Length: 287
Image 1 (cartoon, rainbow, N blue to C red):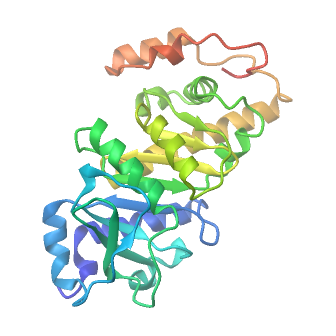
Image 2 (cartoon, rainbow, N blue to C red):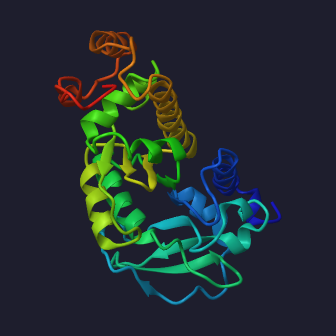
């Protein structure tokens, strides 16, 4: 192996960035991706680390369960479309200190820079997802998914409404995200408020919609996280087309609650009963 780019975790990370760009989710420097590395992956990458790591930088947040962890992160202001072309200048590996409140760059961003401006938000949510999944979740992914964004302009900003609408837009949705999706009202990106609000939702959901902004998902690996993002966005696209084709009114026919329960039973998934039993208001169309 002649470079860090021959390490599988780096190949997979770069491919996921490319896949998101190919979907049209990452205009300019929009979106970001972080991955909490496994010990063996750190060991494979360590020979290519900088001889002198960067200085320690305070995160402004703290997490005991992320002390000493390593993350791959996109760079602040970097274009995901350039990750495959110049990964050494577009992404980085950062080490978290033994207090869980600072990071330093140990590889990447050779022309200067820092991890994504939303790294503190990712960091806090990695802490939550590591805890609630017993360490299984390692990926946090944020993208500007257009159909999800569009729906935040026309549907009530409620987890129950969005989840039911998505579940009823495509048959496999309740299998892919049986717990549902959360919804965060509009907040300034990269700030502490959106980080805290998303953390609350990540206690119970794998995905959170950021109103008028995009989608924020977690998963145990790149394929699962990307697949979750892709499934939610495709369901939102179907819903948008159906609503537009019907003049904004509820469709003539749709997947019923009983249909969803049958899918859950036959596929052996535990559906979020709070959402399934939710009684929509008259104006909460398509759910």
